[in-house]
Length: 473
Image (cartoon, rainbow, N blue to C red):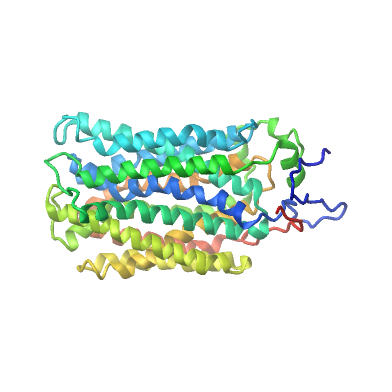
């Protein structure tokens, strides 16, 4: 086998022959902190898009005239896009080797598209289509679909490169850092409408038009997404095929061997199905949180369901602040707690985080004071961080380096499918709770409690052994 390409200051990992541990996966070198930073920091920019989408999407569509009982229809589009795009990006990037890298070419293409759609989406009501018109709603639906398509293509390289370059000893830290930076992006994104309003930018507009504070937040988010993506593309240098094969102990020609997505699903590690059970109930809860929180806050605190009212728009801004608090809680929890925990207790921290999430969601149902909402959103932040870290820790430890990107794309189906199911079911569930948006928060919390119980089905929660006794300086 060819020796890996080297560069000044690089210490090449040497595979130990003969009797390797039964669960041996790779001999990836330890990466310096500056490299881990470059690999993980990019998620800050990507989550600017996702956070603005999740915190403002309900507000945007109700502002342009969407029926609150039909919101689930619009929220089907993002997970449907992810379900289709993510496995395809994984499959084809597994076979992409170019002078720009393996995963980075996809980011190079998708980041500008995502930024462009971020500019277009909040203008769905600004082109004279008319309030609640089919044209305005259709424009918004198409914009959110393309925004999620491009954002998903942006997101996948950042997740896949951890599997490509980070060894087992550093994987918990890498996933924790990535999610912490992701939440930092969420902090920046969700606080923007509130800050812009504070400095005098209009937070209301004529009927059917999204306020300027929201539109400017999307413009700023688009610029930051482009800047951070450019930094990542310029900084991260991926392994060439020979080096990758040596570190992962696979055939250097393995990336040329193709398998269908369906074949990969049939051969998937057991951990995929174990974690998928938990993901089902956790992401049903998250989908309802994204869809109904703004309306729940407006109804409980500002006592209005009128999307055109100043009270509803104030609730939208306050939800942005609560999402900021949620993200800050997640950042602090990630850096100070989870990234320093014992990797042999992944299932314990998974259960703890989702339990916090459940309590937070249920608590929102009972609160009618805007400031008291801060406490449950701190718990939601801990849970949201956990849901984005521990499932990937557990699942990716079961992979061996072959078809890594494809499997991460497939695994994202355990996130997208529950969201689609929740959106379809919302047409019935929303009626059952008396068309109460606070009631949907209670449903979300109960679903999250079921997820806590479902963690018991996970058996494959131990990190695999590796040979990472070398480092890259």
